[in-house]
Amino acid sequence: MDKLIISVATTGSWTTRQQTPYVPITEEEIAEQAVQCWREGAAIVHIHVRDEQGRPTCDPARYARVRELIRARGCDLIINMSTGGGAGQVPDEERIAPVRLRPEIASFDAGSLNFGERVFVNSPQFLEALAQEMQAYGVKPEIECFESGFIENARRFIERGLFQPPYWFQMVLGVRGGSPGTVKQLVHMVDMLPPGAKWSVCGIGRAQLPLGLAAMAMGGHVRTGLEDNLYYHKGQLATSNAQLVSRLVRIAGELGRPVATPN
Image (cartoon, rainbow, N blue to C red):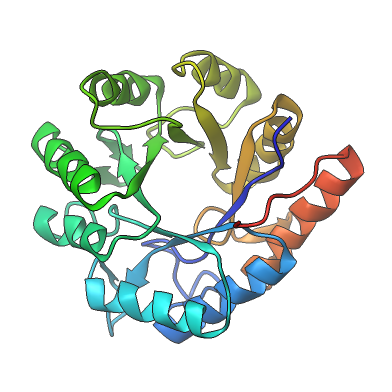
């Protein structure tokens, strides 16, 4: 098996301080927790940024500031900038703007779906423009798939040569309105992937740890973090993103699965 790649999604678009006091909101807080996660064993940080009121934004200046603060600490985390922050509230052009910062990775949410009480809109026109920009700026797409139809959408971009191997898929399971957070669903979606694709799983809420363990055993990779899950145990809030990363590193060690570093 490949070494285990651990991604950490520190903030997200919608997690609030009312839900947990531990979620990082400002650029300084996000960078600090990212560095802590790197020290614990994360190789990739998936970044969302917020405005002064804590609302989701894709402001490239804020993304650039987070990256600057991370690099200033001598941290070589792979930077994955979200293009999904505030979808439906943030203009498409603003969502594409972080790609022009040339991060190593940026998210490519390969379709639309009901997302809890919201609609997560990724129109065909937006996805076409996003794919073209990613290719132009040399940014690796993280192809986020909330249900199996997203994989088929991604195949169309692969067939046209807009995505280059190795393809990096993130299975996002357990969102209310998307595919269920079950191992059966994960296996089904992994079976649909194009040959040679690399994949990771992002389980939402209580699905985070069980799906992470399944991915470890299946040879896939794992995402964790307060964007996706607020709890360490039932009824016990996680006190940091690093705490969630540390648990995965410990379990991977018990399974004999070495953890990958950014380089």
